[in-house]
Length: 226
Image (cartoon, rainbow, N blue to C red; front, side, top):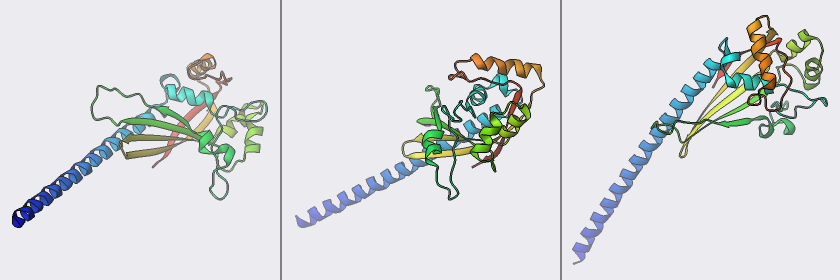
């Protein structure tokens, strides 16, 4: 009788061990699949965004380009950035409270085709911008408010725009951060000026109805991906 009970216990322990091993293998495989799914989706999406934003015809093809053009570096009469403050850190690398990511990052959820299997559960994009390097806010505000076009172009040149693309599936998270540099010159192309002038009344891309100087030709270039 005792021997039978011992044998039953051994069998139960062995079976339980097999269940644990099976679950561990399944969990590991699921995590690996989720991780691979996330990384593939993020890398593909961020590459597509880069191609879109750096295209020479982005001004009439990309809604995201139009949104950035309308909403970045807009200053009110008080010298503030009421709609979209820039991100900044102090000399020690800590976020400046009024320019922390809490205030500076705008988040967008990526709509996915639910009929396609294998996509991440959630994909989102976070965007923030930073002043050009080696310029402080006072000088930037003075130059951006100037009536002289060349002075304004000089202030805008070098603005950095960071786009973080994130995918989440269960506990697995994958993120890619792309940094773009803004180059600005005086626009000479009639088509460019005409298209950008239309943004002033575009409630989708320009919800705050900012004034747009179509003579400023904005060109984005990808400078870092990590």
